[in-house]
Amino acid sequence: MTGDPIIELVEVTKVYPLPAGDVIALDRVSMTIGDGEFVAIMGPSGSGKTTLLNQLGCLDRPTSGDLLIAGRNTRVMNDRELTDLRLNTIGYIFQRFNLIPLLSAYENVEFPYLMKHRRPDGSGRVAALLSQVGIDSAMAAHKPPELSGGQQQRVAIARALVNDPRIILCDEPTGNLDSVTGQQIMEMLADLNRQGRTIVTVTHDPGVARYAERVVTFRDGRMT
Amino acid sequence: MKDIILQLALRSIRIHFLRSVLAALGIVIGVVAISSMGMMGANMTLSVKEQLSGMANIVVITAASGPGGGPGMAPGRFGGGSSEEKISEEEFRDIQKIAEKYGLVYVIYRESDTIEVGDRKGRSTIYGLDEDVMRRIFSVSDGAFPKSTSSVIVGPTLAERYDLKVGSRIQIGDEDEGSTTTVRVVGILAERGMSTDINSDMAIIGSEKLFTGIYGSEGEYDQVNLILNDINDSQKARTEILEKMNKKKTTVNVQDSSRMLESITSSLGTMTTFVMAIAGISLLVAATSIFNVMMMSVTERVREIGIMRSIGTQKSEIRRMFLYESVILGIVGAGIGAILSLGIGWVVVLAMVGSTDYFFLPESLGYIPFAMAVGITVCVLSGVYPAWRAANLDPVEALRAE
Image (cartoon, rainbow over all chains, first blue to last red; front, side, top):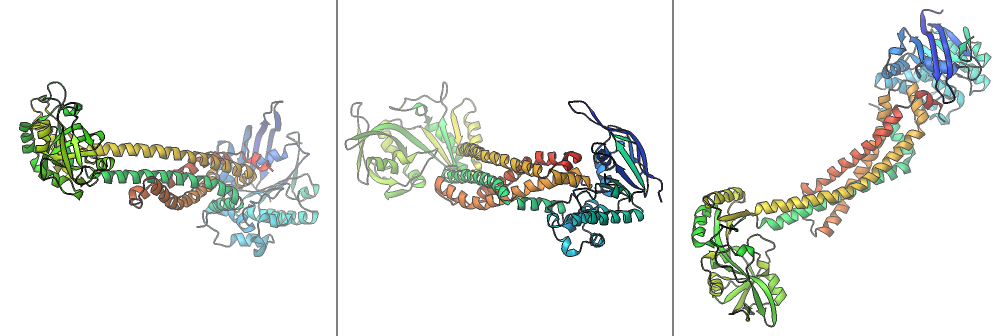
Protein backbone atom coordinates (compact mmCIF):
# COMPACT_ATOMS: atom_id res chain seq x y z
CA MET A 1 0.00 0.00 0.00
CA THR A 2 2.98 2.32 -0.11
CA GLY A 3 3.19 4.51 -3.17
CA ASP A 4 5.60 7.16 -4.43
CA PRO A 5 7.90 8.75 -1.87
CA ILE A 6 6.19 11.54 0.05
CA ILE A 7 9.11 12.28 2.35
CA GLU A 8 12.71 12.08 1.20
CA LEU A 9 15.76 12.87 3.30
CA VAL A 10 19.10 13.20 1.56
CA GLU A 11 22.14 13.42 3.82
CA VAL A 12 20.23 15.47 6.38
CA THR A 13 22.49 16.77 9.12
CA LYS A 14 21.47 18.87 12.09
CA VAL A 15 24.12 20.44 14.26
CA TYR A 16 23.39 22.41 17.44
CA PRO A 17 26.30 24.71 18.15
CA LEU A 18 27.03 24.81 21.86
CA PRO A 19 29.86 26.56 23.69
CA ALA A 20 31.17 23.19 24.86
CA GLY A 21 31.30 21.98 21.26
CA ASP A 22 28.85 21.23 18.51
CA VAL A 23 26.24 18.58 19.11
CA ILE A 24 25.42 16.56 16.03
CA ALA A 25 21.77 15.63 16.49
CA LEU A 26 21.35 14.15 13.04
CA ASP A 27 24.30 12.77 11.13
CA ARG A 28 23.82 12.46 7.36
CA VAL A 29 20.46 10.76 7.54
CA SER A 30 19.06 9.54 4.23
CA MET A 31 15.69 7.91 4.14
CA THR A 32 12.56 7.67 2.06
CA ILE A 33 9.03 7.32 3.32
CA GLY A 34 6.42 6.25 0.81
CA ASP A 35 2.97 7.75 0.46
CA GLY A 36 0.63 5.83 2.76
CA GLU A 37 3.37 4.27 4.88
CA PHE A 38 3.20 3.90 8.67
CA VAL A 39 6.67 4.39 10.07
CA ALA A 40 7.72 4.24 13.71
CA ILE A 41 10.94 5.92 14.70
CA MET A 42 12.45 4.44 17.83
CA GLY A 43 15.57 4.98 19.82
CA PRO A 44 16.77 6.03 23.26
CA SER A 45 16.53 9.62 24.53
CA GLY A 46 18.96 11.92 22.75
CA SER A 47 19.20 9.65 19.74
CA GLY A 48 17.89 12.41 17.49
CA LYS A 49 14.41 11.08 16.80
CA THR A 50 12.57 14.18 17.96
CA THR A 51 15.04 16.32 15.99
CA LEU A 52 14.18 14.23 12.97
CA LEU A 53 10.47 14.74 13.53
CA ASN A 54 11.01 18.51 13.83
CA GLN A 55 12.75 18.43 10.45
CA LEU A 56 9.92 16.44 8.90
CA GLY A 57 7.40 18.85 10.40
CA CYS A 58 9.29 21.80 8.94
CA LEU A 59 9.54 23.36 12.39
CA ASP A 60 13.28 23.37 12.01
CA ARG A 61 15.69 23.43 9.09
CA PRO A 62 18.51 20.96 8.51
CA THR A 63 22.04 22.33 8.85
CA SER A 64 22.84 20.56 5.60
CA GLY A 65 21.22 18.07 3.29
CA ASP A 66 17.89 18.12 1.51
CA LEU A 67 14.42 17.35 2.74
CA LEU A 68 11.70 16.83 0.17
CA ILE A 69 8.06 16.84 1.28
CA ALA A 70 5.50 15.85 -1.35
CA GLY A 71 8.10 16.41 -4.01
CA ARG A 72 9.11 19.90 -2.89
CA ASN A 73 12.54 20.70 -1.57
CA THR A 74 12.10 22.53 1.74
CA ARG A 75 15.57 24.05 1.47
CA VAL A 76 14.37 26.59 -1.06
CA MET A 77 11.15 27.44 0.75
CA ASN A 78 10.73 30.53 2.89
CA ASP A 79 9.04 30.69 6.29
CA ARG A 80 5.67 31.54 4.78
CA GLU A 81 5.79 28.58 2.40
CA LEU A 82 6.94 26.21 5.15
CA THR A 83 4.10 27.43 7.37
CA ASP A 84 1.64 26.78 4.57
CA LEU A 85 3.11 23.31 4.17
CA ARG A 86 2.51 22.67 7.89
CA LEU A 87 -1.02 23.97 7.53
CA ASN A 88 -2.03 22.00 4.44
CA THR A 89 0.11 18.90 4.12
CA ILE A 90 1.14 17.99 7.67
CA GLY A 91 -0.91 17.18 10.74
CA TYR A 92 0.93 17.22 14.05
CA ILE A 93 0.02 15.16 17.11
CA PHE A 94 2.04 15.79 20.25
CA GLN A 95 2.73 13.90 23.44
CA ARG A 96 1.43 16.80 25.51
CA PHE A 97 -1.61 17.29 23.20
CA ASN A 98 -0.74 20.96 22.75
CA LEU A 99 -4.23 22.33 22.45
CA ILE A 100 -4.64 26.10 22.71
CA PRO A 101 -5.90 26.68 26.26
CA LEU A 102 -7.89 29.81 25.43
CA LEU A 103 -9.98 28.02 22.79
CA SER A 104 -12.72 25.43 23.27
CA ALA A 105 -12.23 21.91 21.88
CA TYR A 106 -14.38 22.84 18.90
CA GLU A 107 -12.40 26.03 18.26
CA ASN A 108 -9.12 24.15 18.57
CA VAL A 109 -10.19 21.87 15.74
CA GLU A 110 -11.60 24.79 13.77
CA PHE A 111 -8.43 26.86 14.18
CA PRO A 112 -6.34 25.34 11.33
CA TYR A 113 -9.46 25.36 9.16
CA LEU A 114 -9.85 29.12 9.76
CA MET A 115 -6.17 29.69 9.07
CA LYS A 116 -6.52 27.90 5.74
CA HIS A 117 -9.95 28.94 4.50
CA ARG A 118 -10.27 32.36 6.21
CA ARG A 119 -13.93 31.64 6.94
CA PRO A 120 -15.79 29.54 9.53
CA ASP A 121 -16.51 25.94 8.72
CA GLY A 122 -19.95 25.80 7.11
CA SER A 123 -19.73 22.20 5.96
CA GLY A 124 -19.93 20.64 9.41
CA ARG A 125 -16.49 19.10 8.93
CA VAL A 126 -15.24 20.18 12.35
CA ALA A 127 -18.25 18.69 14.12
CA ALA A 128 -18.04 15.52 12.05
CA LEU A 129 -14.36 15.03 12.87
CA LEU A 130 -15.01 15.59 16.55
CA SER A 131 -17.77 12.99 16.64
CA GLN A 132 -15.54 10.68 14.61
CA VAL A 133 -12.95 10.80 17.40
CA GLY A 134 -15.67 10.39 20.02
CA ILE A 135 -16.09 13.96 21.26
CA ASP A 136 -19.76 14.99 21.44
CA SER A 137 -20.91 18.57 21.01
CA ALA A 138 -21.33 19.17 24.75
CA MET A 139 -17.76 18.10 25.37
CA ALA A 140 -16.57 20.12 22.39
CA ALA A 141 -17.69 23.32 24.10
CA HIS A 142 -15.21 22.74 26.93
CA LYS A 143 -11.77 24.25 27.14
CA PRO A 144 -8.83 21.77 27.02
CA PRO A 145 -8.00 21.92 30.76
CA GLU A 146 -11.53 20.65 31.46
CA LEU A 147 -10.96 17.51 29.38
CA SER A 148 -9.14 14.28 30.23
CA GLY A 149 -5.86 13.40 28.56
CA GLY A 150 -7.51 10.90 26.26
CA GLN A 151 -10.17 13.42 25.28
CA GLN A 152 -7.55 16.08 24.62
CA GLN A 153 -5.58 13.74 22.39
CA ARG A 154 -8.75 12.91 20.47
CA VAL A 155 -9.35 16.61 19.94
CA ALA A 156 -5.73 16.94 18.83
CA ILE A 157 -6.24 14.16 16.27
CA ALA A 158 -9.36 15.88 14.96
CA ARG A 159 -7.37 19.10 14.72
CA ALA A 160 -4.57 17.36 12.84
CA LEU A 161 -7.10 16.03 10.34
CA VAL A 162 -9.18 19.13 9.72
CA ASN A 163 -7.24 20.31 6.66
CA ASP A 164 -7.03 16.78 5.29
CA PRO A 165 -3.21 16.45 5.43
CA ARG A 166 -1.34 13.75 3.57
CA ILE A 167 1.18 13.29 6.37
CA ILE A 168 0.52 12.89 10.09
CA LEU A 169 3.47 13.30 12.41
CA CYS A 170 3.17 12.00 15.96
CA ASP A 171 5.56 12.66 18.80
CA GLU A 172 4.96 10.01 21.49
CA PRO A 173 1.20 10.19 20.91
CA THR A 174 0.41 7.83 23.80
CA GLY A 175 3.16 9.01 26.12
CA ASN A 176 0.81 10.85 28.47
CA LEU A 177 -2.07 8.37 28.32
CA ASP A 178 -2.96 5.20 30.17
CA SER A 179 -2.54 2.00 28.21
CA VAL A 180 -6.22 1.48 27.36
CA THR A 181 -6.62 5.03 26.05
CA GLY A 182 -3.27 4.75 24.32
CA GLN A 183 -4.47 1.71 22.48
CA GLN A 184 -7.63 3.48 21.37
CA ILE A 185 -5.55 6.35 20.03
CA MET A 186 -3.25 3.98 18.18
CA GLU A 187 -6.26 2.21 16.67
CA MET A 188 -7.42 5.57 15.38
CA LEU A 189 -4.03 6.28 13.83
CA ALA A 190 -3.97 2.82 12.27
CA ASP A 191 -7.41 3.55 10.85
CA LEU A 192 -6.18 6.81 9.36
CA ASN A 193 -3.28 4.93 7.82
CA ARG A 194 -5.69 2.45 6.27
CA GLN A 195 -7.50 5.43 4.73
CA GLY A 196 -4.25 6.20 2.92
CA ARG A 197 -2.52 8.74 5.14
CA THR A 198 1.18 8.59 5.76
CA ILE A 199 1.95 8.34 9.45
CA VAL A 200 5.31 8.89 11.06
CA THR A 201 5.44 8.42 14.79
CA VAL A 202 8.26 8.84 17.23
CA THR A 203 8.05 6.50 20.20
CA HIS A 204 10.03 4.38 22.56
CA ASP A 205 7.03 2.21 23.32
CA PRO A 206 7.28 -1.09 21.41
CA GLY A 207 3.50 -1.38 21.76
CA VAL A 208 3.14 1.70 19.58
CA ALA A 209 5.77 0.52 17.13
CA ARG A 210 3.76 -2.66 16.66
CA TYR A 211 1.19 -0.69 14.66
CA ALA A 212 3.81 0.44 12.18
CA GLU A 213 4.73 -1.24 8.95
CA ARG A 214 8.33 -0.18 9.31
CA VAL A 215 10.37 0.59 12.39
CA VAL A 216 13.42 2.79 12.05
CA THR A 217 15.82 2.88 14.98
CA PHE A 218 18.05 5.79 15.75
CA ARG A 219 21.18 5.92 17.82
CA ASP A 220 23.46 8.92 18.20
CA GLY A 221 21.86 10.75 15.32
CA ARG A 222 22.17 7.88 12.87
CA MET A 223 19.84 5.27 11.55
CA THR A 224 20.86 1.79 12.60
CA MET B 1 -16.83 36.74 10.08
CA LYS B 2 -15.45 35.16 13.18
CA ASP B 3 -11.90 36.30 13.65
CA ILE B 4 -10.33 33.71 15.90
CA ILE B 5 -7.14 35.77 16.22
CA LEU B 6 -9.17 38.67 17.61
CA GLN B 7 -10.98 36.21 19.89
CA LEU B 8 -7.66 34.99 21.25
CA ALA B 9 -6.53 38.56 21.92
CA LEU B 10 -9.79 39.38 23.71
CA ARG B 11 -9.68 36.21 25.80
CA SER B 12 -6.09 36.84 26.76
CA ILE B 13 -7.07 40.29 28.01
CA ARG B 14 -10.06 38.84 29.86
CA ILE B 15 -8.08 36.24 31.78
CA HIS B 16 -5.51 38.87 32.77
CA PHE B 17 -8.18 41.43 33.48
CA LEU B 18 -6.59 43.30 36.38
CA ARG B 19 -3.23 43.57 34.67
CA SER B 20 -4.86 44.77 31.48
CA VAL B 21 -6.97 47.34 33.34
CA LEU B 22 -3.88 48.73 35.05
CA ALA B 23 -2.06 49.02 31.73
CA ALA B 24 -5.05 50.72 30.13
CA LEU B 25 -5.27 53.06 33.12
CA GLY B 26 -1.95 54.58 32.08
CA ILE B 27 -3.46 55.38 28.70
CA VAL B 28 -6.56 56.81 30.37
CA ILE B 29 -4.41 59.19 32.42
CA GLY B 30 -2.31 60.16 29.41
CA VAL B 31 -5.32 60.87 27.24
CA VAL B 32 -7.02 62.90 29.97
CA ALA B 33 -3.83 64.89 30.59
CA ILE B 34 -3.21 65.68 26.93
CA SER B 35 -6.77 66.54 26.07
CA SER B 36 -7.33 68.63 29.23
CA MET B 37 -4.19 70.62 28.62
CA GLY B 38 -5.06 71.01 24.95
CA MET B 39 -8.57 72.12 25.77
CA MET B 40 -7.26 74.54 28.37
CA GLY B 41 -4.95 76.07 25.79
CA ALA B 42 -7.67 76.25 23.19
CA ASN B 43 -10.13 77.86 25.58
CA MET B 44 -7.51 80.32 26.73
CA THR B 45 -6.68 81.25 23.14
CA LEU B 46 -10.32 81.62 22.22
CA SER B 47 -11.03 83.73 25.24
CA VAL B 48 -8.01 85.99 24.68
CA LYS B 49 -8.95 86.29 21.03
CA GLU B 50 -12.41 87.38 22.01
CA GLN B 51 -10.99 89.98 24.40
CA LEU B 52 -8.61 91.25 21.79
CA SER B 53 -10.88 91.11 18.80
CA GLY B 54 -12.32 94.49 19.83
CA MET B 55 -9.04 96.04 18.81
CA ALA B 56 -8.32 93.89 15.81
CA ASN B 57 -10.03 96.40 13.55
CA ILE B 58 -7.65 99.18 14.54
CA VAL B 59 -4.72 100.34 12.46
CA VAL B 60 -2.30 102.55 14.37
CA ILE B 61 -0.17 105.06 12.52
CA THR B 62 2.75 106.68 14.31
CA ALA B 63 5.54 108.90 13.13
CA ALA B 64 8.61 107.02 12.05
CA SER B 65 11.36 107.54 14.60
CA GLY B 66 15.06 107.77 14.08
CA PRO B 67 17.19 110.16 12.09
CA GLY B 68 15.47 111.77 9.17
CA GLY B 69 12.22 110.36 10.40
CA GLY B 70 9.51 112.73 11.41
CA PRO B 71 9.74 116.47 11.66
CA GLY B 72 11.28 116.08 15.09
CA MET B 73 9.20 118.45 17.10
CA ALA B 74 9.83 119.34 20.70
CA PRO B 75 9.74 116.35 22.95
CA GLY B 76 6.99 116.13 25.52
CA ARG B 77 7.83 117.02 29.01
CA PHE B 78 7.93 113.44 30.23
CA GLY B 79 7.61 111.87 26.86
CA GLY B 80 8.91 108.43 26.20
CA GLY B 81 10.69 107.41 23.00
CA SER B 82 7.64 107.06 20.85
CA SER B 83 6.17 110.41 21.75
CA GLU B 84 9.18 112.32 20.54
CA GLU B 85 8.22 112.00 16.90
CA LYS B 86 4.98 113.62 15.89
CA ILE B 87 2.67 113.46 12.97
CA SER B 88 2.02 116.89 11.56
CA GLU B 89 -1.36 118.30 10.62
CA GLU B 90 -0.36 118.06 6.97
CA GLU B 91 0.62 114.42 7.24
CA PHE B 92 -2.60 113.69 9.06
CA ARG B 93 -4.59 115.18 6.19
CA ASP B 94 -2.65 113.00 3.75
CA ILE B 95 -3.34 109.91 5.83
CA GLN B 96 -6.97 110.87 6.10
CA LYS B 97 -7.23 111.18 2.33
CA ILE B 98 -5.80 107.69 1.89
CA ALA B 99 -7.50 105.93 4.75
CA GLU B 100 -10.93 107.58 4.87
CA LYS B 101 -12.44 104.98 2.60
CA TYR B 102 -11.49 102.21 5.05
CA GLY B 103 -13.13 103.72 8.11
CA LEU B 104 -12.87 106.37 10.77
CA VAL B 105 -9.56 108.23 10.93
CA TYR B 106 -8.78 110.29 14.03
CA VAL B 107 -5.83 111.78 15.83
CA ILE B 108 -4.61 111.36 19.35
CA TYR B 109 -2.58 113.66 21.55
CA ARG B 110 -0.83 111.73 24.24
CA GLU B 111 1.36 112.72 27.14
CA SER B 112 2.52 111.08 30.31
CA ASP B 113 2.49 113.38 33.30
CA THR B 114 2.41 113.67 37.04
CA ILE B 115 -1.01 113.87 38.59
CA GLU B 116 -2.17 114.69 42.06
CA VAL B 117 -5.47 113.69 43.61
CA GLY B 118 -5.85 115.20 47.02
CA ASP B 119 -2.55 114.33 48.68
CA ARG B 120 -1.75 111.40 46.48
CA LYS B 121 0.73 111.81 43.68
CA GLY B 122 1.21 109.55 40.74
CA ARG B 123 1.56 109.34 37.01
CA SER B 124 -0.95 108.85 34.29
CA THR B 125 -1.30 109.05 30.57
CA ILE B 126 -3.30 112.02 29.38
CA TYR B 127 -5.03 111.80 26.05
CA GLY B 128 -6.44 114.61 23.98
CA LEU B 129 -9.24 113.55 21.68
CA ASP B 130 -11.93 115.07 19.52
CA GLU B 131 -15.25 115.03 21.42
CA ASP B 132 -17.12 113.30 18.61
CA VAL B 133 -14.43 110.63 18.35
CA MET B 134 -14.57 110.18 22.11
CA ARG B 135 -18.25 109.42 21.90
CA ARG B 136 -17.67 106.92 19.11
CA ILE B 137 -14.89 104.90 20.65
CA PHE B 138 -15.68 105.04 24.34
CA SER B 139 -18.62 104.39 26.54
CA VAL B 140 -19.00 105.74 30.06
CA SER B 141 -20.14 103.61 32.94
CA ASP B 142 -20.85 106.55 35.13
CA GLY B 143 -21.34 110.26 34.45
CA ALA B 144 -21.08 111.80 31.00
CA PHE B 145 -18.58 112.83 28.32
CA PRO B 146 -16.71 116.11 28.98
CA LYS B 147 -18.26 119.24 27.52
CA SER B 148 -15.74 121.85 28.62
CA THR B 149 -11.97 122.25 28.50
CA SER B 150 -11.72 121.72 32.23
CA SER B 151 -13.53 118.42 32.44
CA VAL B 152 -12.23 114.95 31.76
CA ILE B 153 -13.23 111.33 31.80
CA VAL B 154 -11.02 108.76 33.50
CA GLY B 155 -10.40 105.08 33.03
CA PRO B 156 -11.93 102.66 35.55
CA THR B 157 -8.59 101.36 36.85
CA LEU B 158 -7.33 104.85 37.50
CA ALA B 159 -10.64 105.76 39.11
CA GLU B 160 -10.40 102.82 41.43
CA ARG B 161 -6.78 103.45 42.33
CA TYR B 162 -7.31 107.13 43.23
CA ASP B 163 -10.84 106.68 44.44
CA LEU B 164 -12.10 109.03 41.74
CA LYS B 165 -15.78 109.72 41.35
CA VAL B 166 -17.78 112.00 39.14
CA GLY B 167 -16.98 115.44 40.51
CA SER B 168 -13.49 114.55 41.79
CA ARG B 169 -10.66 116.90 40.95
CA ILE B 170 -7.27 115.98 39.50
CA GLN B 171 -4.26 118.23 39.34
CA ILE B 172 -2.17 117.59 36.24
CA GLY B 173 1.47 118.61 36.18
CA ASP B 174 4.12 119.06 38.82
CA GLU B 175 4.17 122.19 40.94
CA ASP B 176 7.99 122.10 41.13
CA GLU B 177 8.38 122.11 37.38
CA GLY B 178 5.95 124.77 36.40
CA SER B 179 2.30 125.26 35.84
CA THR B 180 -0.37 122.86 36.91
CA THR B 181 -3.89 122.42 35.65
CA THR B 182 -6.79 121.18 37.67
CA VAL B 183 -9.51 119.27 35.91
CA ARG B 184 -12.82 117.85 37.05
CA VAL B 185 -13.88 114.28 36.45
CA VAL B 186 -17.27 114.17 34.75
CA GLY B 187 -17.33 110.53 33.72
CA ILE B 188 -15.85 107.14 34.40
CA LEU B 189 -15.16 104.99 31.37
CA ALA B 190 -16.34 101.44 30.99
CA GLU B 191 -13.55 98.92 31.15
CA ARG B 192 -11.98 98.45 27.73
CA GLY B 193 -9.16 96.02 28.34
CA MET B 194 -5.90 95.81 26.52
CA SER B 195 -5.74 97.66 23.27
CA THR B 196 -3.23 98.96 20.78
CA ASP B 197 -4.84 102.30 20.13
CA ILE B 198 -5.64 103.81 23.50
CA ASN B 199 -5.05 102.23 26.87
CA SER B 200 -7.90 104.08 28.44
CA ASP B 201 -8.31 102.06 31.62
CA MET B 202 -5.41 103.83 33.31
CA ALA B 203 -5.75 107.17 31.53
CA ILE B 204 -7.23 110.64 31.76
CA ILE B 205 -9.04 111.66 28.61
CA GLY B 206 -9.89 115.21 27.78
CA SER B 207 -10.68 117.30 24.75
CA GLU B 208 -8.04 118.37 22.25
CA LYS B 209 -8.38 121.92 23.50
CA LEU B 210 -7.69 120.88 27.07
CA PHE B 211 -4.62 118.95 25.94
CA THR B 212 -3.13 121.68 23.77
CA GLY B 213 -3.99 124.15 26.51
CA ILE B 214 -1.66 122.30 28.85
CA TYR B 215 1.03 121.05 26.51
CA GLY B 216 0.87 123.28 23.48
CA SER B 217 1.95 121.36 20.42
CA GLU B 218 -1.24 121.95 18.48
CA GLY B 219 -1.26 120.00 15.20
CA GLU B 220 1.54 117.75 16.32
CA TYR B 221 -0.13 114.45 16.86
CA ASP B 222 1.30 111.44 18.64
CA GLN B 223 -0.77 108.94 16.82
CA VAL B 224 -3.34 108.56 14.08
CA ASN B 225 -5.83 105.73 14.44
CA LEU B 226 -7.88 104.16 11.73
CA ILE B 227 -10.89 102.15 12.81
CA LEU B 228 -11.69 99.81 9.97
CA ASN B 229 -15.20 99.23 8.76
CA ASP B 230 -14.16 95.85 7.52
CA ILE B 231 -11.61 93.93 9.55
CA ASN B 232 -10.39 92.13 6.43
CA ASP B 233 -9.07 95.43 5.04
CA SER B 234 -6.39 95.62 7.68
CA GLN B 235 -3.59 94.34 5.49
CA LYS B 236 -4.69 96.35 2.48
CA ALA B 237 -5.03 99.61 4.42
CA ARG B 238 -1.67 99.13 6.04
CA THR B 239 0.06 98.55 2.74
CA GLU B 240 -1.61 101.50 1.05
CA ILE B 241 -0.79 103.93 3.84
CA LEU B 242 2.81 102.75 3.98
CA GLU B 243 3.24 102.97 0.23
CA LYS B 244 1.77 106.42 -0.18
CA MET B 245 3.13 108.04 2.96
CA ASN B 246 6.64 106.67 2.71
CA LYS B 247 7.17 107.31 -0.97
CA LYS B 248 10.02 109.80 -0.59
CA LYS B 249 11.19 109.02 2.90
CA THR B 250 10.00 106.97 5.82
CA THR B 251 7.48 109.21 7.51
CA VAL B 252 5.16 106.83 9.33
CA ASN B 253 4.98 103.42 10.92
CA VAL B 254 1.79 101.48 10.54
CA GLN B 255 0.80 98.76 12.89
CA ASP B 256 -2.30 96.71 12.30
CA SER B 257 -3.57 94.88 15.31
CA SER B 258 -4.27 91.69 13.47
CA ARG B 259 -0.55 91.03 13.51
CA MET B 260 -0.34 91.50 17.21
CA LEU B 261 -3.35 89.28 17.64
CA GLU B 262 -1.62 86.69 15.52
CA SER B 263 1.52 86.86 17.57
CA ILE B 264 -0.37 86.56 20.85
CA THR B 265 -2.35 83.63 19.51
CA SER B 266 0.81 82.00 18.31
CA SER B 267 2.51 82.47 21.70
CA LEU B 268 -0.48 80.88 23.37
CA GLY B 269 -0.29 78.06 20.85
CA THR B 270 3.36 77.48 21.68
CA MET B 271 2.53 77.44 25.36
CA THR B 272 -0.29 74.97 24.81
CA THR B 273 1.98 72.67 22.83
CA PHE B 274 4.57 72.84 25.57
CA VAL B 275 2.09 72.02 28.30
CA MET B 276 0.68 69.20 26.20
CA ALA B 277 4.16 67.83 25.68
CA ILE B 278 4.58 67.70 29.44
CA ALA B 279 1.25 65.92 29.67
CA GLY B 280 2.53 63.61 26.96
CA ILE B 281 5.18 62.34 29.35
CA SER B 282 2.39 60.52 31.16
CA LEU B 283 1.74 58.66 27.94
CA LEU B 284 5.38 57.69 27.83
CA VAL B 285 4.93 56.10 31.24
CA ALA B 286 1.79 54.42 29.93
CA ALA B 287 3.75 53.14 26.95
CA THR B 288 6.25 51.49 29.28
CA SER B 289 3.46 49.83 31.18
CA ILE B 290 1.77 48.57 28.00
CA PHE B 291 5.12 47.33 26.74
CA ASN B 292 5.69 45.50 30.00
CA VAL B 293 2.26 43.89 29.94
CA MET B 294 2.71 42.83 26.33
CA MET B 295 6.11 41.31 27.04
CA MET B 296 4.59 39.42 29.96
CA SER B 297 1.82 38.21 27.71
CA VAL B 298 4.33 37.02 25.12
CA THR B 299 6.44 35.24 27.73
CA GLU B 300 3.42 33.53 29.27
CA ARG B 301 2.16 32.38 25.91
CA VAL B 302 5.40 31.17 24.39
CA ARG B 303 4.12 27.60 24.32
CA GLU B 304 0.82 28.65 22.80
CA ILE B 305 2.74 30.54 20.12
CA GLY B 306 4.78 27.39 19.46
CA ILE B 307 1.61 25.34 19.10
CA MET B 308 0.04 27.84 16.76
CA ARG B 309 3.16 28.02 14.63
CA SER B 310 3.55 24.24 14.50
CA ILE B 311 0.03 23.70 13.22
CA GLY B 312 0.49 26.19 10.41
CA THR B 313 -0.14 29.70 11.76
CA GLN B 314 1.76 32.37 9.86
CA LYS B 315 4.04 34.81 11.66
CA SER B 316 1.79 37.63 10.54
CA GLU B 317 -1.16 36.08 12.40
CA ILE B 318 0.86 35.83 15.61
CA ARG B 319 1.90 39.45 15.18
CA ARG B 320 -1.70 40.40 14.60
CA MET B 321 -2.80 38.62 17.76
CA PHE B 322 -0.44 40.63 19.97
CA LEU B 323 -1.02 43.89 18.14
CA TYR B 324 -4.75 43.40 18.64
CA GLU B 325 -4.13 43.00 22.32
CA SER B 326 -2.28 46.29 22.58
CA VAL B 327 -4.74 48.05 20.26
CA ILE B 328 -7.67 46.86 22.37
CA LEU B 329 -5.96 48.15 25.51
CA GLY B 330 -5.33 51.42 23.66
CA ILE B 331 -8.88 51.82 22.38
CA VAL B 332 -10.45 50.99 25.73
CA GLY B 333 -8.00 53.25 27.56
CA ALA B 334 -8.43 56.08 25.07
CA GLY B 335 -12.22 55.68 25.09
CA ILE B 336 -12.47 55.88 28.86
CA GLY B 337 -9.93 58.71 28.77
CA ALA B 338 -12.07 60.60 26.26
CA ILE B 339 -15.18 60.33 28.43
CA LEU B 340 -13.29 61.42 31.53
CA SER B 341 -11.67 64.25 29.56
CA LEU B 342 -15.07 65.82 29.06
CA GLY B 343 -15.51 66.12 32.83
CA ILE B 344 -11.95 66.72 33.95
CA GLY B 345 -11.20 69.01 31.01
CA TRP B 346 -14.27 71.04 31.85
CA VAL B 347 -13.10 71.48 35.44
CA VAL B 348 -9.56 72.37 34.32
CA VAL B 349 -10.85 74.93 31.84
CA LEU B 350 -13.17 76.41 34.42
CA ALA B 351 -10.36 76.65 36.96
CA MET B 352 -7.63 77.93 34.64
CA VAL B 353 -9.51 80.05 32.12
CA GLY B 354 -12.45 80.98 34.28
CA SER B 355 -15.02 80.46 31.59
CA THR B 356 -16.32 77.44 29.74
CA ASP B 357 -18.02 79.48 27.02
CA TYR B 358 -15.79 77.94 24.37
CA PHE B 359 -15.55 74.44 25.83
CA PHE B 360 -17.87 72.80 23.36
CA LEU B 361 -16.42 74.43 20.26
CA PRO B 362 -14.63 72.11 17.84
CA GLU B 363 -11.33 73.97 18.45
CA SER B 364 -11.54 72.84 22.06
CA LEU B 365 -13.24 69.43 21.90
CA GLY B 366 -11.01 68.55 18.94
CA TYR B 367 -8.25 67.81 21.43
CA ILE B 368 -10.15 64.76 22.66
CA PRO B 369 -9.93 62.79 19.40
CA PHE B 370 -6.39 64.10 19.03
CA ALA B 371 -5.39 62.78 22.44
CA MET B 372 -7.19 59.50 21.72
CA ALA B 373 -5.25 59.12 18.49
CA VAL B 374 -1.98 59.82 20.29
CA GLY B 375 -2.90 57.32 23.03
CA ILE B 376 -3.82 54.57 20.58
CA THR B 377 -0.69 55.23 18.51
CA VAL B 378 1.44 54.97 21.64
CA CYS B 379 -0.24 51.62 22.43
CA VAL B 380 0.32 50.26 18.96
CA LEU B 381 3.95 51.33 19.01
CA SER B 382 4.43 49.72 22.44
CA GLY B 383 2.98 46.51 21.06
CA VAL B 384 5.15 46.36 17.96
CA TYR B 385 8.26 44.90 19.51
CA PRO B 386 6.51 42.28 21.70
CA ALA B 387 4.43 41.22 18.69
CA TRP B 388 7.50 41.01 16.50
CA ARG B 389 9.28 38.98 19.15
CA ALA B 390 6.35 36.61 19.52
CA ALA B 391 6.13 36.04 15.77
CA ASN B 392 9.83 35.35 15.43
CA LEU B 393 10.12 32.82 18.24
CA ASP B 394 11.69 29.58 17.17
CA PRO B 395 8.74 27.12 17.03
CA VAL B 396 10.83 24.23 18.35
CA GLU B 397 12.06 26.25 21.30
CA ALA B 398 8.61 27.65 21.91
CA LEU B 399 7.02 24.20 21.99
CA ARG B 400 9.55 23.05 24.54
CA ALA B 401 8.58 25.86 26.97
CA GLU B 402 6.62 24.97 30.07
